[in-house]
Length: 302
Image 1 (cartoon, rainbow, N blue to C red):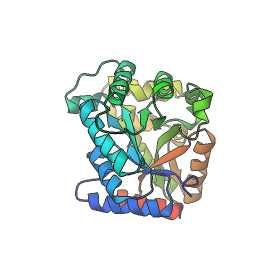
Image 2 (image 1 turned 90 degrees about the vertical axis):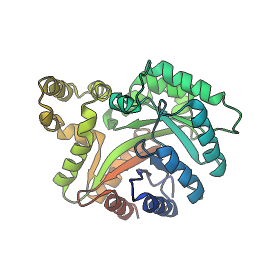
Image 3 (image 1 turned 180 degrees about the horizontal axis):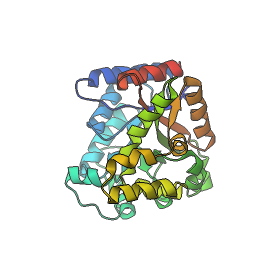
């Protein structure tokens, strides 16, 4: 069933970490395609817990910022997870964004050069045993091309369905169609019969991303120039509270999944048809927290 179901994105919030592991075990029993853990709240530690507490499901970071640890530390931890899990772990890496760099206290270099250097140095760390596949986070075409050159996969986040063919064109055709080359996208998802409530949840989720220049430039490339120009004007004029109203319904439907269960299932199929082998649902709920959202996902794909 793993090829029929999407993967899930789960974050282990404080006081709910053990329960999150149990949900991952339930996702494994149900045949979901994988578990991918975002950077907040210690995704490397969460993935190590998954290595010990799951048996068959693929899992990984989505993503681990390359500046948050030394390369040696990454290699040590990744080698342990790779071995203990029997090769189920994927190390998803990325450069992250400006606010994350401030929190980490780092001054990044050029994204492409830093990513290339990380991959080459990581692979040179041979003292710790075999290392896992590397998945590169990408939005723009040059990073997608780098993933195709050096990594075993590429993962997008909040990408536009209508633009995915153009993005994947940066990969060699052999990689686009290879079963062992990972292509994923993290998709904000809210399942509810109350469509307006579900839209509101996803709009809140993506508002913070609209403040990030990298994302605005990507969405301009995807055809949403009017929306992104309006947001940039609002930010420049100090009207940050106005930003959500410029995130059009068309844009929202192109970048997220929302609405009744049947519509969300159709959306997952559309992402697969667009070339995303592994749609990764990032669940939120119009009726509760992440735990409620996962219940809604399980019911939708039960």
